[in-house]
Amino acid sequence: MGGRLKSISPSTSKAVLVVSLLVIFWAIAVASRLLWNGDVYGLDFRNYHPDGVCYSQFAFDFAGESERGLKEIFETYQRIGSSSGGLPSSTDAAALSCTGIGLEARVLYPLLSVPFVKILGLPGMLVIPALSWLLTILVPVGLLVRRGQYLGPAIAGGLAIASVTLSRWGVANIVDPLLMALVASTLLFLPIFRPPRKWDFLGLALLAVAGALTRQSFPIWIAIALGPWIAWLLMRRNSNGISARGNNPWTWPLLVLTSTSLASWTIVRSIFGAQNSAYVINNWIENVKSSLGSGLPEVLQRAPSAGVVPSAPSLTEHLAIIASETSNNTVNFLDQLREATLHSLSLAYEVLYTEFGQLFVLDRALVILLALAIFGAWHCRAHDFAYMFPAMFLVTLALGAVNSTVGVNFRFQLSTIPFAILMAALAIDRLSKKQKPNQRTL
Image (cartoon, rainbow, N blue to C red):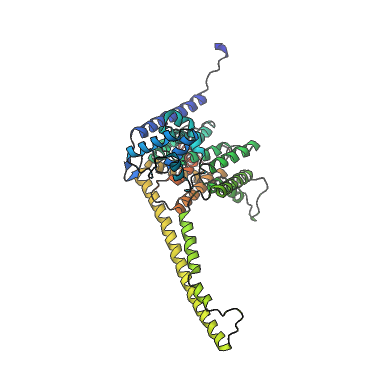
């Protein structure tokens, strides 16, 4: 028996050590969040958030324990002193309070939480987010330790655990950590360190569908492959600007993620209505519509009635009045359009300014992780997969800006984290080895 046992290789033991340490540190971080939470600089660092009320009630409903859930939710939110949104006392009214606000399609998180709420009650709603936080770290770390890289993944993973922002959202009853983990799982199916396989496309499609059942997120799924796809084309153009021969390995991932995410979003929207409020864009569109309609009825009222032919002087006078009022209305419309645009841009700027301000004040670990990721993306710029991180970062910043919710503390950018860990780990290994990037050794 003993002769059949194979000795564990040093590389395997190092990989196990890195993963084990990260899991231990993650468990300590989760325990700390459960023991110590509350308000931090006016931000809600509690484990239970206002929009988590509906997700929690959905989970209890799916578990067949609606009355128990309503009671636990009401008592918990009352105890922590956070607004529970005026929870009603009956199950029917509670269900009604969670309809029509764009959350009905976000069923994946409540469904996955069913076994945990049946055992643990409301605290069971924290299990899936916490496991999602861990999965987000282990997927990129696992990819790299399998390639014999240990220091970079260990440090990058440690920074993701030390981040107070990630710990805040990683132990909270919201859907964003689950979306982050689903996005992280795409790394297992993308042509990063190997050519694409046909089974990868099924995995990507299933993840995109799961993402649509988590929250409206189709721009994120498209950005995952769009950045590397464009980079591959640009890096393989010859001196005449003609793309070099060869199949772009990112074409099929891009087609699968784009078609699946858009189709899922269309179906969800047709059944449940809009699932996310792009307030800045919607507000701008409404202002433009209002500006277009202003003043127009007065001009039309001066038009001659049907079948009435005005005299030449009268017609000339009428046309002059219409031309004058049209000119004035055009100037007014352009002024209102400029004001609406500046207002929307100021809202977006306020969101982004607050996001980065909170980041630099509250979370040095995440700042370091992102800085290393930016350096890693630049250092590995000869590789198409390095462009996943900047593409995702820009898209998630834009999504946070158009949502216009001020002070959400990097919540809309969580999907960037797995790619940040990957690129930061590569940057750390590069710095530790002090070698130039080589496409064959990456």
